[in-house]
Image (cartoon, rainbow, N blue to C red; front, top):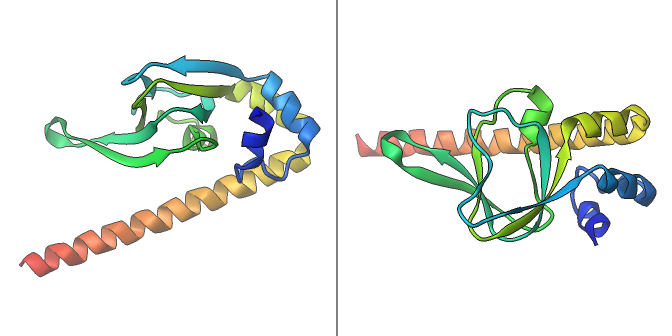
Length: 154
């Protein structure tokens, strides 16, 4: 079942089934209670996370204590990939809205896995760059819309 879910992710869809089976063996299944944090903004994150079940959101904190849900994740979605790419603290929080089951892939284990599979590593990185580029384009569009909307108010 988990391999089938991984196959739906662009980051892993081109991997051979036997490679995915081995990668899953390096992962840990984690249950997070409702309102529990999977990743906290500003804190170190050492894992890539795959949503297996439950409602999970990527959330940002705004001035005044407001919270903004940026993206609702569904089964098969991943989070933590930005920290995987840049090794910096998390840029946003990931929170379970209901009890959620996730698969945790420690970066150390993933890097070890990729050391023996350069073709998988290249495919993973190509998809990671494409995902980040789409998100950046979307963010740019949202900033542009917000800027234009602020001009209309004046």
